[in-house]
Image (cartoon, rainbow, N blue to C red):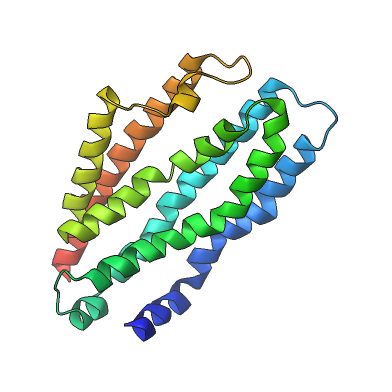
Length: 212
């Protein structure tokens, strides 16, 4: 199992390294230059948080592609006899865990740099929360052994949370004079786009698997 997993990692390494190259080679230096200025305006801090949110959400979706290629591959299905077992779920969650582990230095840096300006934990949580949908989708997909089923389960959880827990309290209250309505508008839009994308992707992946 380990050899099969590492074989897929070797085949997919350009896809896996691309997000880290963009975040640490492009996004972090630009943001570091802005935050190193003597005074940083609220608008610039908002733009930094918004850019972080968009990039990390994009790469969370990006990282799902090689994960799906591994989890839905014929080789892995034959190796596991198509059965639902703890080992297969563990590898899938670990695959997405690599992404969060790679984000940790960037999120810690973002927290440290924005804390004196009053954003602090809110600035780090905003981009981190955008990966929630991707991780939940992979978990449900593995649990149900079905791409559309996993997508629908994750989407249903988020639809339920619209009425219960639409967004973290630290974001709902607003930071540094930023109206809470601004956070809520972006939060709902982000979730709506995630649900739409993942449901469409689930249908596509299931059809592709059926063709094989």
